[in-house]
Length: 628
Image (cartoon, rainbow, N blue to C red; front, side):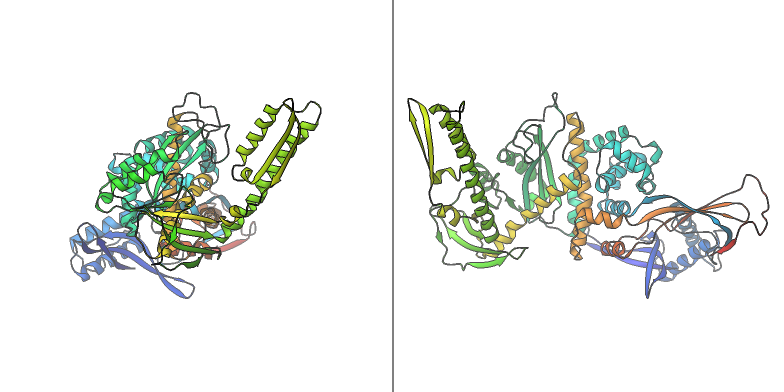
């Protein structure tokens, strides 16, 4: 064993310092690695290197001899006190198997009594707990006077939402039967109830704003992020239930096509690395464009934004003229999709059109264009993949429009069908409303006599103009950037917010909402957002190391690491039980090492249960084996 220094840097005081850990070496195949046993802090009490070495030697003596030994070397009282303190910490935190260290532990056991039981998943849970440690959630909750028990319960629920998103009732069953998360957080799994989980979610929601600000600042400092670009978008999710007494659940335009269900709107601001900066919950009938002012006012009040205002990237649904004026007035640069297709524009001859490829290697043409009497800058974009999709949709809409006309025609010729001129035109009008981009390319004639329709005919005009415009759209920005590819790269960061919503809705199961009260529904959404902090903290670091797996795949890989209790009887009729984590496979190891996380939460836990009746077994009753 030895004491190893780790260099640190404090951004607040702009000073460098060292902290020390007691480590030991071990071999992993052909490699020699170091395992940290316990952190010793700065060790300001021991200024010299020699004193630190003596401290390490003294702690090792105590560990190897069970603590009941005098110092083999002459050490000062200060070193002895520190050694005693850290030895107690090793015992308390179970950071080392302290029994019979200086030789392999041996027991003579009956091999036929060997049993494995209480096997539980631990890999994904241990991964999330270490990410929560990086985020400093426990320290934040302690600063809010939360008890250790409440903090452990909060961490348990957040990890559960990240690893096994389900209702509180199903989560209780998972915690009690399948997962080791309570073993890691220290909360008694037998005390877990759905009411406790509901209660801790609501308590966390009461800390929403200060907690978001803390986590935003923490991730910026942790990963040295500058927030030069922020992305803003909204999504909605629906309720399974009537929500008659709700003040926020409203009928609106559902992005999941659930027009029968009431909605709630979630607005989020994320930076280009995918970390949340701010979130808000709106009524279900709130339009996308009406929310930006409240979000910008909230962001403008934050110190980091006041010092350096980021570029706001948003989709066309939010980029109304009023919102563009608001961003200009507040001093924000912006980039968005133009809400209208430009007609009078000309190429910017000072720039050269460029051809790039998207992630699927599909070609995209970019060209800067000018619009007369407009101070904004525009980027003409033509996507070949988008053009193919739009042309295909145009053909499909044309087929459906003609099928609709055919049904109206059949009704005219059928006995008892709709024949009155007014009613027939109403049906045609509804059909045109359903296919606004296609109907103008058809000439529809209705023959009638005495207000009774006798025949319907239609003729399709060429809609080559519509197909020529397929795949073309315009980006609008306040940035005077000469390089088209730079503008495209900035806009393309909006894919990050699309992934954020996909994780929240699908991986973290925010859709649909089964809760019956507004308070429970908002606490449910906030819990999902906290779980997303954990997910993105892990995925961001993995992407830096070239691992781009989605969250569900990461959980699947990590769930191959289990925690199991092995019990066996020895010749003294004692039952020896060992609780130990399985060795991580290569994929799990790769993830741990990329994150610089510990491979296992503990080495092993051993207990011995003495027999109720002492008796001697004959040697030929059961075969014996020497363990160890």
